[in-house]
Image: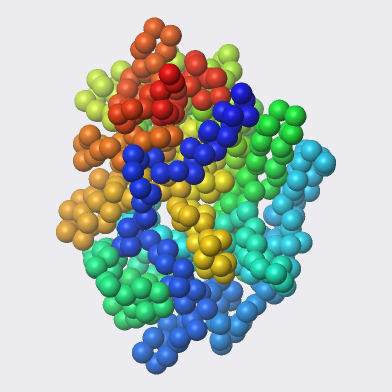
Length: 504
């Protein structure tokens, strides 16, 4: 039975959370056309009318390395670049630690030698507009993410390694004269373009295209998500995968990308070990204005409380497992969490007394859920596909072997909110950056009240407790007609379940 339930959870992460056909991300906010991505990576049809060098990874990181972006460089040359020595050392160190804590033969570790081989290269797997992160970016225009997957040439075909590398660029590039409104207008205009494939790629990077301003000078940071270790118990059918998450920023002093604080990745172990630091974090987070931003999903936690690396353990989303980021900070995972239920109830009351109307957090359980999903690792543990919210497109493979969906159920369900923000910026209105929980991103504010995108098979839902009561934070997490909210892996006491066909 445990094996069957685990399979159900896995399948639930692979199918769309709607009652109907699979959906693709809007063309205005993401580039997922395989032929277009190939052209943007290799620039095989470069000419005078389209002089942009494209987005080959080595060309972006080391613009002087090659004059011809279509040259097939392997990762052996990429990782030999001095500016990646910090990243290379961080990967090697983490794999050494994992080898000690994840012994063979029970565990299989990520193959670093294969990643660095001359027969492996990073291929551009997708481009994603993130104007919805305008509240983070200093210029308010948000980001553009270039997402790469390492592809290993086996001789008989290609194999994608379980890793993504994201180059995060400032959305308006290095053009200070361009306004955020200009950026949004360019991206939204591309939605109506008829071109596909290489023709579309050339228009995206041509003068006036949304990708035209982007290049090496626009790089803000580099992010990695790597499946560092896996384990499967053949006797019980239990499966576990651990993912390494890291963020690197270029340090002019060393000339290298160095690991830095990860946005909102709370350093739980340090907060629990250092009493004064933990209490300072608690006081800061529970202040009414900070609590309101926390509720909206727009809180930016100070670096003093953040970690520089994280391991996300899956599956763990539908549990109070100790591997969840909030374990020990809030919720019933430990007997005496840093922030107790009484602290949360009192903070919610203080916010109400100030006239602050919270949209998502209405209970201690909702507070704990938000504390998990505001972190990198907690978001990663929710509604991904094989550990990734954007596994991307493999244009190096035969069409029959390409993945069915470029983005996860969370990624697809969040597109309406992201597009609404881009439209608001284009129209000169103040955008609403509020976001729902990672489990149900479409439920964010009044704009999407009654929206039915996320009610289908496998959707997260508010699970009735023994007395039939649904936690107030998840009360509107309903299921589509014909489906009922059922516990996952027997977790009947957990406040969230999944929408499945009702048992007869």
